[in-house]
Image (tube, rainbow, N blue to C red; front, side, top):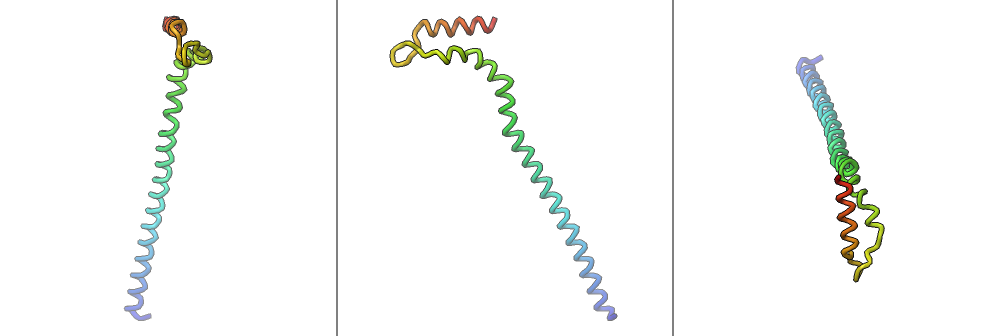
Length: 95
């Protein structure tokens, strides 16, 4: 085989190996990026739901029985007795 042709063949082979190594690295980084974004969005969407379940929902459930009653005031506004019931239930719940 011609030495010049053999040198070109070896150079092409080395370039192909280097190209394959770079493509594998790019593919690996692409997968890491995909799973990182997936984890980030899971955290962004699930943490607020968890915090709501742990801290806000028990607080709002204290007043759920009051919310089901309809205010008897003018234009649906609560009367002073409705407000007093709300204050009393809050004070009873915080003690």
